[in-house]
Length: 321
Ligand code: ADP
Ligand code: TRP
Image (tube, rainbow, N blue to C red; front, side):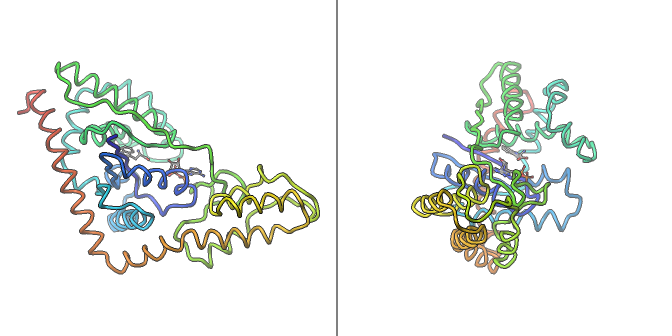
C-alpha cells in the first residue's frame, strides 16, 4: 500500500484524535510507502496569524514524532515545503467542475459554523486532490467526514486521465478509520475541540487529573451494580488499561459497592503511564527543535522528488511541457 494522509495544524491532539486517528496513521507506517504531512496550506484558510501557524505546524510535527511516527519508516513533511503541490493544484483546478465542489458538504458546514467563505475554502478539495495524486498514493486513511473529498479526488483524477488520454494519475481509495470506538469527552458526549470536553494528550499531569476528577457521572448509589459497557468512564479506562485490568474493572462494576472516584483515579493512573513515554519524547524534541527541523527537511526532500516526477507527467500530458 502507498499510504498518505494530511493533518491540519489547528490545535493540540486530544484523546479522541489520538485513538480515533493518529494511532491508526502511525500503525500504517510499516507499509510500502507512508507519507504524512502537516497541511499548513489548508490551515491558511482558518489561521490568519503567521507566528501561530508556524508554531502550530512545528508542534504538530513534534506531537506525531513523540507519539511514535518514525522517520525511518514514514516520510514526514510540511505541505508547503513541496511547492509542486500548488502547481499541480492549478492544473487540477483548470478541469475541476464547479458542481463537483458545490456538492461538498464540508465547505457548507464550515461556512455555517462562521468561517469566512473564502475561495481557498471552496477549492480546498482540489488542493487535497493534489496532495494525494502528487505521490501516487493509493490509500488514504481518513475520518468519515473526509470520504467525500477522496471521491472528489478520484473524479478529478479520472477526468484528467480521460481528457488527456493517459493514465497520469493513480486513483486512490479512502481507508476509513475505525470510528467504532468514539472516544467520549468529560461530559460523556463525543470528545471534540468544539465541545470543550476534551483532554489533551500532552497536557500537564496535574491538569489532566483535574479534568478526569471532574468527568460527569450519573448519580447512581455506590452500592448498586452496573453494566460497564455503556459507561463512559469505563470506556475511557478501556482505552488505556491492559485486558486484565479492564476485565477486573468490569467485574467491579458488575459487583457494585465502589465509588466513581476510584474509577477516576484508576483512569488517571492508566492514562498517565500510557502517555509517559510520548510525554518524555515530546520534552526531548522540544529541547531539540533543530532535530525536528532536520526530519521535516529530509521528509520534504523525499516528497519533492516524488511530487516533481508526478507533476512532470501531468505537465507533459496536458502540454505545459
Ligand atoms: P475535533 O472534533 O476535536 O475538531 P477533528 O475533527 O479535528 O476533531 O478530528 C480529527 C480526527 O480525529 C478525525 O479523523 C476524527 O476521526 C478523529 N476524532 C476526533 N474526535 C474523536 C473522538 N471523540 N473519537 C474518535 N475519533 C475522534
Ligand atoms: N482535509 C483533511 C482534514 O481536514 C486534511 C488533509 C489535507 C488531507 N490534505 C489531505 C487528508 C490529503 C488526507 C489526504 O482532516
